[in-house]
Amino acid sequence: MNFVFSRLEQQSVLRADSLAVIGNRYRLTFAELFALVERLSAGFRAYGIGSCSVAGLIFLDPVRHLVASLALLSLRASQVALPLREVRAMRITLAEKSDLSVQITDVGDPEANLGYPTIRIGENWELSTSRGDRQMPSKAYRTEEVQAAMYFMGSGTTGAPKLIAPGFDLLSSLIARDLSVRTMWPGERHYCMSSLDYYTAKRRTIGCLSAGVTVVLPDFRPTKILEFCRKGRIDHLSLTTSQAAILASEVAREKTSRLPAMPWVRSMFVGSSPVGE
Image: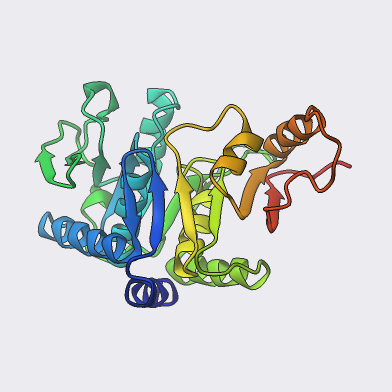
């Protein structure tokens, strides 16, 4: 991940006072973002998280999720998203498959706790801990480095869903590839409608930051995509095929038939499934 963090550190100097992240609770400049990543990295390290750890991420606030994720990547600790929208049994299965050693969260509700040792991130980025009551699998106490940067489940289109585990070098290469095929300029704004709980959304978001692009991370998906992009001055959009279809229907319902319908948008990336005409 040297490629990503060297560029992010560069942005924290060259674009120190420019907005890196726009969320509902937090608006962070590149300098503030980098400082928070270093702060959480130091805090996680003090609690024993390192290259032998696998951390589960359970977050309500996408900005705290992003900073925690970057801090774990800087420590070369592996991570897996355990989204609250999934049923508890599914989250426990994913945690067990990835040999989880700790969970990191901003959720106070006991229902979010899967029984693992927990680090909680507060509103002011303070850290608190609690012990878990689960019997840890032997691999959770591993002494060798974990090679996977992230774990996530496949779609299951070719059979039972499989655990996918891209390594740090592969993740860095894919981010570099993303940036090579999509021209983005520092100061522009990117919005991905999918949650950071999804691997591709997180990868694209981290890539945008390394390029000096501002990422927009609302707490909830907007009900009106076109209006949200217009008010938020979004330059680059990342959508799934179904989300793009919703946007197309919104454009079709506009009172004016003038084209282009979104002249301020410089690129729109549509993925996750084949795109129909």
